[in-house]
Every structure is written in C-alpha cells, then in structure tokens.
Image (tube, rainbow, N blue to C red; front, side):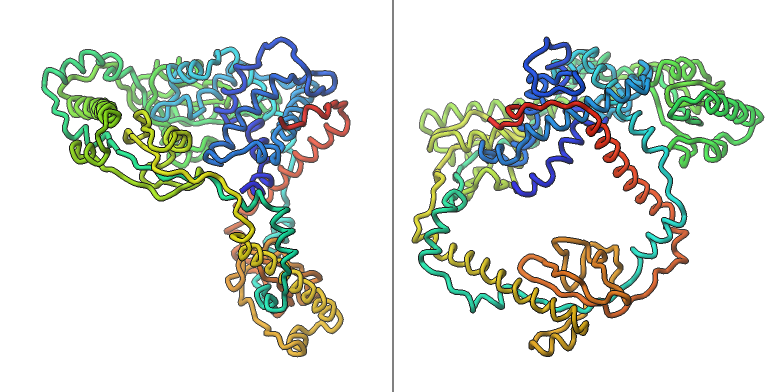
Length: 636
C-alpha cells in the first residue's frame, strides 16, 4: 500500500490545495493560519513567506487522511517514507506562484462570485439547496469564521480564473481527433511468446547463507502486525426503536416543540430559467452581445412561445435538456439579484433579464407556494418515526451503559446478551487493516480494540447504527519470526526473485535474435517455445483478455504495426515476461467517428489542458525566486 500511496500522493495534494470543491481541507486549514502573525518561514516565493504554521496545519490534516486509509497501522516510518512535508511545501509554493501571477494579470473576484460558489457547495446544502444555517453550522464546527473562509474561497476562485484563461485558448482540430481515433480504435491481433518465472524455478539454488542474509536485511518486513481477538455486544438502534410505543400526547408535544423548526414551510417558487453565460474574461463587447441576445430571447418568450422550447434552444445551463426546470427554491437559496426578482413573480409570470455572476437569466415562475406551517395530522407519521429513532438510539445507549455496569460487577457477556436479547459476537484475530463486516469503520471500536488490556471492558461505543461493548480476549503482539520459522517463506521469495532474473536474461537474449530474423514463429520453434495469439482487441482497451494488464503500458501502446512488426523491448505482467510481434490489423471504423467525436473531443481537450497547466506552472517556477530551506522538508 505504501508504494501505491507514494505514486498517488502528488495527485492527492494537488487536489487538496487547488480544487475548488475540496471543502473539508479548506475548513481545516483556513481558520488556523489566516491572519496569523508572521512565524518561522519554511519557504519564500518571490519574497512572500510561507510560514511554519501554514505547513503544520496542512500537514496534520493530510496525516489524518492517511491514518484513515491505513486504519490504525500508520507508523512514523511509513510517514517518513511518504515525504508528506516535501509534497505540501511544493504545493504551497505552487499556490503562491499562481496567486502572484493572477494579481499581476489583474484578476479579481467579486463578493457575488464568492457567494455563488458557496451556495453551490454540497456541504452547505440541505435537500439540494443552499442553507445559511447549515453554512454557519459547518464553519462553527470547524472553528472558522465566515470572513476567514471567504478569504480562502476568494483565492481558490482566483486560481480557477487563471486556469480558465490558460485552458480556454486551447483548441482541438478535426484532424487531431481523426488521427487519434484512427490509432486508438484500430483492431489488432499480436503474436506473443510468454516466459513465466515459474518455469525457471527448478534451475534455481538458494544457499543457507543467502537465506540468513535476507533475514537480517528484512527483519522488519517479516514482522507480523499486532492482532487482537475481541468479543462484543451489539445494541442495534432499530431493535430498541421497534419496542418504543408513542402516545398521542407525546407526538403532540413533539409537534409543538419542533413546529417552527421542522414543520414550517417557507414561501417557495418553482422556477424554469434560461441562462446565457458571460464570457470568462469579462470582455465588454462580448458582454454587450450576450445581453442583446438575452433581450431578444425575452421578447420571444413574451410573445407566447413555449418557454421550455426556448430553454432547449438557447439556454447554456445544464438544466436545458429538462426544459430549464430548476425545481423549488426557498428564500435564502438564490443569489440576491436573482432571488429579489424570482420571489416577486406570480404563477406563470416571466421576468425581465436578470444579471448575476453566472450570466443573464430569464426566469419563469411555474408555481408559487405561500409560506405555511404543516398541521399535526399531516406530519404525524413523520413525527412518530423521528421519536422512535431518537428513543431507539437513547434506549440502546442506556442498555449498553447498564450492561457495562453489570459486566464490571462480574456478569458474563453471554448472560447479558441472552437477558437483553442482543447478539454477542467473537471475532477472529484481526489487525488494524482487517475489516469487520458487521461493525464497519467505527474508529472508536478500532481504538478500543487495540488499546485496551486483555479482559478489560470498553465504554459504550457509538456507531452509525448501534452501540457496542467490547472486551479483548487475546492479543498477538508484533513479532519478528525466528529465522527457522521464516526460512521456507524466505527461500520461496529468493527462488522467485532468482527465477525472474533468469527469465529476464532469457527474454532479452530471445529479443536480440527476434530483432535480427523478425520471425517469431521460427524463433519459438528453434527454442522449443509456444507462440500464441492475443486475438483481436482494440488498441484503446486497458488489457488483453489472454494476458491481462501490462505493468508498463496499455497493450495498444505497444509500438508495433505492419511497418514495424517486432517490439523493441520486453514487457512484463506480474511473474511473466512477453515478446510481442504484429500479426494483423483492421482499420478503425471511421463511420462511427462522427457519433463518438464529441466524447473524444472532451477527452483530448482535457488531456491538452492538463499538459498546458503543467507547462504554465513549470514556467512560473523557472522565473521565480524560490527559497526552501532543507529543514522544511524533513519528516519529524
């Protein structure tokens, strides 16, 4: 897993710092270092300081993410191997460079744009709509003020604007698409010779000295992780809620207590809209043209033309395919400029042209729902379900606490399970990375299992669907196996490694011959080997059915054809090596090109954009004065 994370950590960190949608990372970071006094520098970018505090905030958050991945088995040694500090410093430097360039170009973000971005964030929505209460609640829970959060949001949108300038100038021609399609959709059939490492194992000898040396070099790798076996009582919420009886008075009391909070239905309007987007660079002439077009569309709408049809024809919003139906909105869920107009409309009325950060809107009120409070009869079933869920959780907690007291006084868990009617489970031995299907990922359960002494009882532990009481029956401490116990496993590993080396030597020798005689069938016959065919496959496929995925490249990327029939290198897949030669090909079906053109265009354009962004960032780094002391990259 460590190797996998080393390969992936850069994309993780880039996402965490630069993607606008990564809200949680922002919340953890911004409240801790915005407006901090100038602290010890970990880097300077064109004279601007990145503080130690800023690095530490992001480092701790990233460590928590990795702890979640490793499920309690993340060690300091593993952390040092990941070099997270170095990756974070690199991305902080990159972020600072991008903001500096944006300032140089005069890119600005309006308050309305910030509010629009916040309103779109799913973390701040309730039932698909922005909720101011939810917004403030999330910020409070992360100890972040709205002002602090909006500073970070402004930076993110600024960077995205810079990205848009770079990306929007890129084009993909029909010629590029045709050539890409012709190559990727060509059907091919290859010859191949497989050399399996297992066929060479019988030729390998491993000495006692080699086994001993391997053991000394890899003692830590041979260590078995800590494992525990626990027994636990499970108190499911639904089991206890099913026993709850709700009286009429209790339901009525609940209604009265929560009427304004849960059962008030604010005024709402169901909107259909047409959106004509503003150009990203804010060019005045383009903006005037968009406004003129919006006015012309409005005139068509007011002559009685089908509004949904006009939406499909003109709107640049994703909802256009559904006729622009945006659904129901309550006050506080729209941008102020749009909301003021929307809630003044009567049913069936069409607005004038409304400008927002997104562009020009034309609104139609399909339905208007006046504010009201739902009555008790209308909400009774909902109330009963809510009370049962609350009481079920509460009763489960009480039962777990009561049984814990009994267990501490000497009662057996098996007797308590029988008396209470809840299940008692005994796990197999498991490590921190092993799943427990019935429990799932309950962090406090894992912490208790691996921190409690044997036979000590845990407190009541709350999970998403149940409470738990657990007791550790046995622990198997991490242990380096004695040499004699590990001998067979070490011998097997060494033989496999040596066999692969022999197979590689043989494969490279055969490849040299194949390049000279260019006849894979004759080569195989001369050496008593079998030639197989891959069967027809499309070059863009991720793997070959008879072989699977190759380690170095997609199968279609193997550069062989009727003009160059022999591969110039060996390819590997787990414990096998392959020599490839071209047998036959069938040209791509260009009649399908037009049908798949738009999808391919999006793929090629996305790839171009990624390359352009990386080239742009590399250019900023080359021109910048960046100072990063070596100590900033050291893992503690």
